[in-house]
Image (cartoon, rainbow, N blue to C red; front, side, top):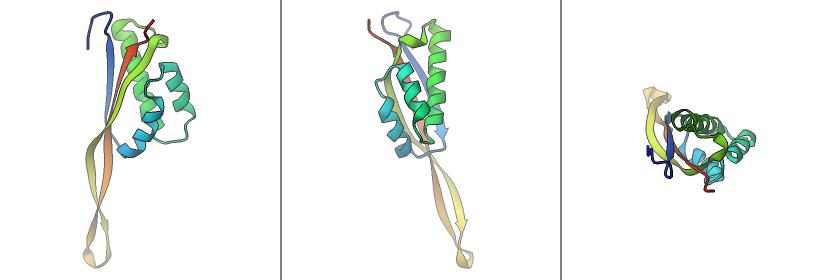
Length: 119
């Protein structure tokens, strides 16, 4: 993290979220570039399951900004948000005649970078 007052970037990362990256990107694309307060309102009322971990991560990033840098949450906006593919949980579904079919349960990593609104 930069400590320069003109270029503060606040990061928060959530790893191994038990959700498909494709489904999370659908929600993330709606809040990219928005202010912190707008993103909170959008995430509150979207009907997707992916909103909860993103909402928690956004709140955590804002708390980091407040605690580490003393910044107000109203002056923040989402400068970068990305969703990366994580590892798969590998399971087996029992099938007929002693066979087992593999089931891959996807995970993802979400990274949020907040920045100060330009004046």
